[in-house]
Structures are given as structure tokens and as C-alpha cells.
Length: 219
Image (cartoon, rainbow, N blue to C red; front, top):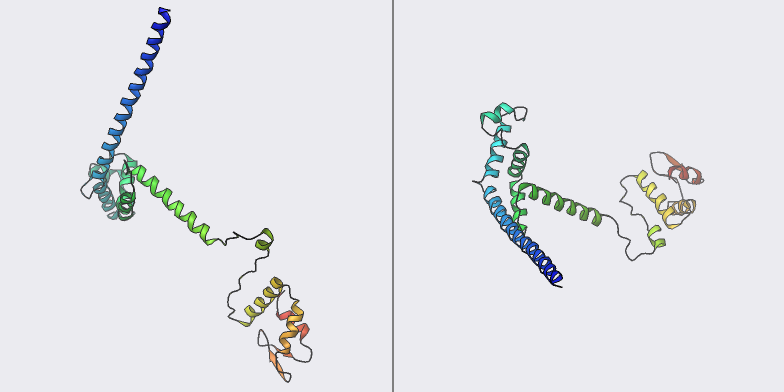
């Protein structure tokens, strides 16, 4: 009995110690994150490390005809030992300073590094692109499958007789008209005497135009 009680106390004490340790670590993490966010804000200020490093790298690239940064030039400026990724991110930040700062200002939690900022901006840009693509696609919401399949195509304003003929052919197919009947109806709208000009400079005889007009209008 005593052993069970004693073991129970030991087990309870162990759990309590683990929970306390987790609580302490959680608080330490929050303090660390807060410190990193504050340090990041200082580094992206115009007098901060990231901004000034990016500016220097941009200047070095501009002075090179090939726009390449040589190791010797980096050593001359005492920045060769700075991690390559850090240099790349700093230069990216400087070149996109306005957009970066706007994104930082719009963030509620803030950022702890340029890596996090860059990742967030890429995700935001992709989301905007997906939204724009989705809005550009015609919507079939509220339509049945048969309605969606039989949706009539839009026809742009024809600019030439050939385009007009194609538009007529498309309209006939879309609305279920026989193109020969439409061609005959078009002929009825023409003067009954003389000749007329269709599609090109070629002249068609009014007395028997059906076969030639069918060749002019694509099916």
C-alpha cells in the first residue's frame, strides 16, 4: 500500500515536472520570437543590416558589366563571409523594398526573417494569381450539364467579308440552322437584278449562286 502511494506520488511529481518544463520552454520561445521580430524590424530599416547589405550588393552588381559579383570584389568589401543565402535575400529585399514593406505592414504577426517574408509574399502572389485565373474562367454555376454543354459561343465583330462568312457559319451551327437555307435567305435580301459581290472581289451570278456561295462560306 505504501509502495503504491509512494509510486503514485513519484509519477505525479514526474508529470508535474514535465509540464512545468514545457511551460517554461513555451515562454522562452515566445520571448525568442518577439526578440527575432524586433531584430528583423531593425534590420529592414533603411539603416539596418538587410537593407544596407542589399543596397551594397546592388551597387556592386551595377558596377560590373556582366552584372556578376566576383568573389574578389566581395572580399574587397569584406562581405564574402556573409552567408550566400543571406546576401541573396538582402539584395532581393532591397530591389523589392516597396512591395516588401507593404507586405510587412499588412501582416498582423510580423516576420522573423527575410526567408519567412519571401515565402509569405510568394504564397500571397500565387493565391492572387489563382483567384484571377478562376475569375477569368466562364462560370457554369446554376446551369445544368446540358446547359453548360450547349452554351452558345461568343462571336467577335467581323472586320472583313471572310470573317463575316465564318461568323455566319458558326452561328448556323450553334443555333441549328441549315447553312444552305441561310445562304438562300441572304440572297433574297439582295437586289434581284444584276450581280453582287460576296466575300472577295469575285462576282457571283444572281440566277444560280447557291453552289458558289456555299464555297465562300466555310462549314
